[in-house]
Amino acid sequence: MNIVVQKFGGTSVKNLKCMKQVMEKVLVPYNEGNKVVVVLSAMAGETNRLLGLAEEWSSEPDLAEMDSLVSTGEQVSTALFTMLLKDKGIRARSLLGFQAPIRTNSAFTRARILDIDSVRIKSMLEDHDILVVAGFQGCDEDLRITTLGRGGSDTSAVAMAAALDADVCEIFTDVPGVFTTDPNICSQARKLDTVAYDEMLEMASMGAKVLQIRSVEFAKKYNVKVHVRSTFSDEIGTYVTQEDENMESILVSGIAYDKDQARITLARVKDVPGISASLFTPIAEQGILVDMIVQNPSRDGRTDMTFTVPRADLEKTLEIIDSIRDELGAEEVLYDKNVCKVSVIGVGMRNHSGVASKAFQALKDDNINILMISTSEIKITCLIEEKYTELAIRTLHNTFGLDQSMSEANLR
Ligand code: ADP
Ligand code: ASP
Ligand code: MG
Image 1: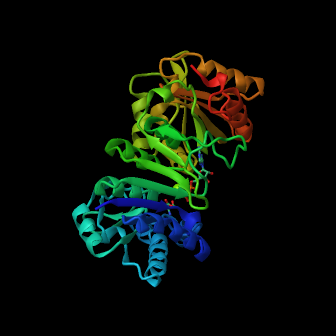
Image 2: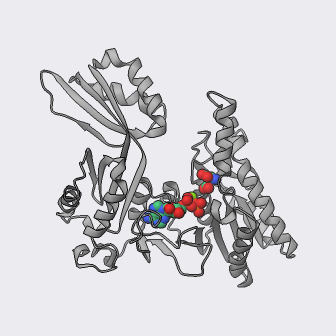
Image 3: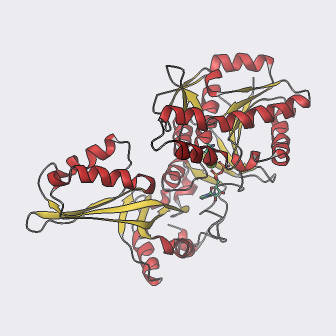
């Protein structure tokens, strides 16, 4: 049995007209004789609407109930789409997370997939030609509904493709592929034919929401061929694949940005062993992801600690700091919400110096102040003032000649 997995995001299923276009896409592998597993998101805006309701109803919504609530968006889109297929006489049915079942842990609102019952799904594919699976959701051991975090339908689709050993996992969205940077922010952005798993991992973790990071982790681990493409055109999109030699000859493949950041500084904390542990352990225990961390050299036994957290977690982080402030001996706590992380990413910068300095120089030439820096072997991230985001992206994009596929400025 040849199986193709196709995922469609919120804008692709936002109304009947779009769903009819989705049907055209689904009929392609179907008409070629494949079994098709279609993973759908909620209709555009619906997940946000449901999250808003929870906020209105409760000061601190119970997370399990929150998942029960927000997962309904995908229940609507899968049922409606299956109706369209059945009207055409196609043997189809919808499947919610618990019906597949897609088993997850119990980390409500950010659950991880543990297992998908591929035997059951394959046996359903004996009697059906198309299964329409609700993305973003699963169930835990106790059969409670869980969700996989924002953008989680990507992960549902790639995990499904891995479990079913599908030929390909097509991620249909509102842009024609993965671009050198967000095409909605930079008109010079260029579509990439291929992107390496590791590059895509960095791009996703640094804010490129075109794929959820967990989906790329799955794809890499299980070697799933992922094809990101547009619902609204027929052009070939971007393949997310294993790294090859050609990719390494190019220094930078993309620029990502993340405005969902806040910077916190603890001024003049005691510089004694264990201070970082006392600070970051309680933050981690609340599930808050600290990203960039800088500790200044100490003066008079005191030092400054600066770090970033997701903006939505700022209040909670400040409360935690307040509760341990005496222990840390911080003289002042400062924070800034108007910051943005801009990252330059490429496997070609492994073992190649000069990329960072070129990026710093470009930002300097545009008078953009760098607030913090962090690097990995294939990424350089600068924290800057949020108001310079678009300018920084354009400048870096130009500096590395990303609007052309083989620019001199971007070859090793
Ligand atoms: P969907 O609803 O289909 O899951 P998303 O909104 O989650 O779509 O992801 C697609 C969006 O990702 C695009 O509209 C684009 O604005 C954004 N994006 C950010 N960085 C990139 C990039 N490098 N390439 C393509 N799209 C990107
Ligand atoms: N509907 C969910 C969200 O908006 C999941 C997804 O679209 O991938 O985050
Ligand atoms: Mg998405």
